[in-house]
Structures are given as structure tokens and as C-alpha cells.
Amino acid sequence: MLVKQLYSFDVPAEKMGNFVKWCAETAKPFFEKFPEIKSIHYNQTIVGKPAFVKEVIFSDLNGFNSMVQKVLSDPKAQKVMGEFYSYVVNLESKLVMEIV
Image 1: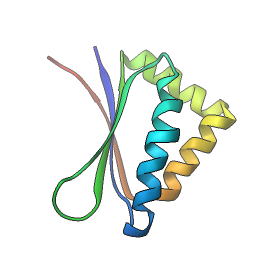
Image 2: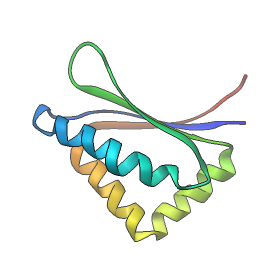
Image 3: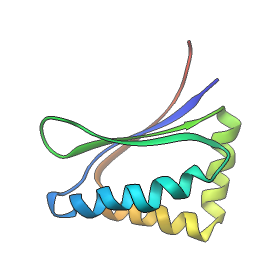
């Protein structure tokens, strides 16, 4: 059963270009190396303020829990997560499980 971690957040206009480049060149390639992560996507809303949705898909809850432990103990993962937090404001996160 797939587990998804969904983030919604805004990126200030002055950080937008750097954020998009960072997603493509740093974050996505880094996290796609972990076997627990099935896929990771960064999406921007089409209308309104510069809002984004980040979706991280895990094969199951055990994969999610394993990844959390890796992020907590891996200095490189902590660095990448710190960079993410330096770009975003109004961050919300939800963990959801696929039911059908």
C-alpha cells in the first residue's frame, strides 16, 4: 500500500529561480537514490501566488519510517532538507495512505 508525504508551501518570488534550479539539480536527484522513495515530484500551481506541492511516494509505511531514520542520521540528507527549509514559507505536511 503506497504511502505519500504531501507538502504544500510557498516560495518567495526572489527565491523562485534558485529554488526551481535546486529542485532539479540537487533535491530530486539526491532523494531518488534512496530505495525507500518510489518517486518525488515538485509541482507549482498554475494560478495565484507562487505555491508548490511536493509529493514523495513510498512503497509502504515501513519505507517511510526507514527514510525518516536515514534523514535523521545522515548529515548530507540533513543538509539537503535544511536547504529546502531555507527556500519555503507557509509549509504544511501530511502523510497519506492509498486506499484504492
